[in-house]
Length: 188
Image (cartoon, rainbow, N blue to C red; front, side, top):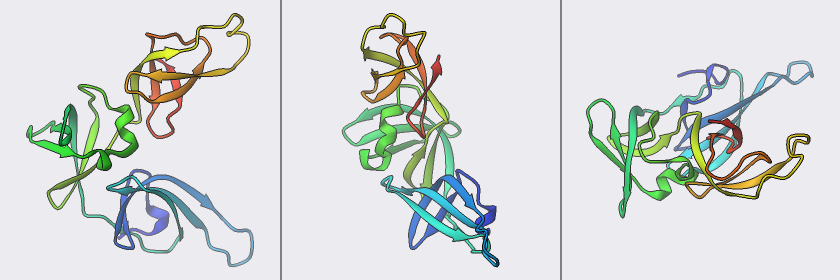
């Protein structure tokens, strides 16, 4: 079992009987004598997507969760939930809307690079790629002088989520969106 100082972003740990995926790690070194380095993990619960922060000292032992990551491709959505197909053995994983959580806003037909997290032969959550390409379906028109000033406007994407985009983005354009922060990255 690794120490808190050895844990990396993306790892999955077990704490107080709940499984969490590490989304961000903040390290702070107190300046007082004898103060040990503290590690603050921003985590997301698996399943369910509950977000919280956990703080550990550098020497604290962290228990890794016993799970398998299976690279998969999104196939379709039906009454039972979201269906993903394993890229290696072509088996299907069905996850409910609760299991998917906020990630549903980034899933489009044929999206590749998704990892289905499986615990005891049961799919419990997904891990999205760092960024996805989505089409802008609705946004305010381009304003004159928008290139001279840096301002943002809300835009609705093909999956229904809303992100802030630069003024020069128009409906029909494809943009790259960060799946962790939900922020505009660039045109695609």
